[in-house]
Length: 284
Image (cartoon, rainbow, N blue to C red; front, side):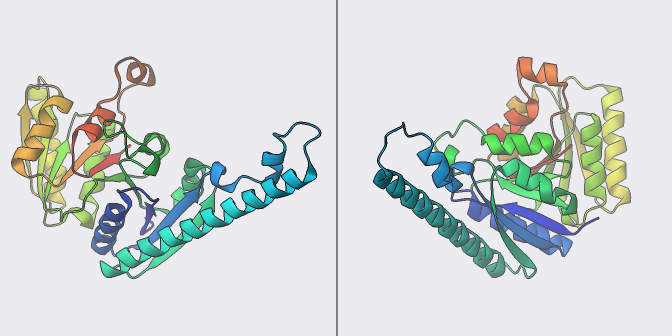
């Protein structure tokens, strides 16, 4: 497995936390960190695109001015992107990360991520990007796109960083939940952390047996884990438990329902990420 972490940064309030969490993960994995900032198409538009919107008869001087303004915007966007990457590298270095590379890309964020994802062990991204900071009740659209498309775990950083010592696994018995447990069992990230596996809902003996199976898999790997079944919907009961018990990280399978069900009633995954104020590690 590749020991490289991809940290996605922009000018949002979440990017500093992305860097701190990336450094924490990299330190526990002894992994390198690749920091990426992607310039959107609007930031890298060409003079040809701008001039193409003009009607016939427009003066050539105006075309020249538009081209110069377009080139200036592109240069400023690139300078801003480089400054974001430099700040990110400084934060990572201050946190003790040593193997750091930075990349300034152009185009669509998801396409840029998919190009490098096969070489990554995990992706770290903020809950919302700079364009969505005002929408506190919503996730960034890029986050949802990346989580739904990614084949590696996605670590969604909270707005602020705090050391991780207590972990809750939102366990529903699904294939993605079992993969999350399997990933945990194989990862040094979770060594020495207090782990609780929780099923929210009407669980019976069968679900308790699956919880015990998951806990055993962790214990065999040297990760003792408690199990619990609590009544209620996950997005209703787990956030209050997280706050009351001082949980620092939530782990869960990503988007376990069928696409049709997701379109009709929404996703528990999305609801949980929206509801909690701690980082969430999602595994498909």
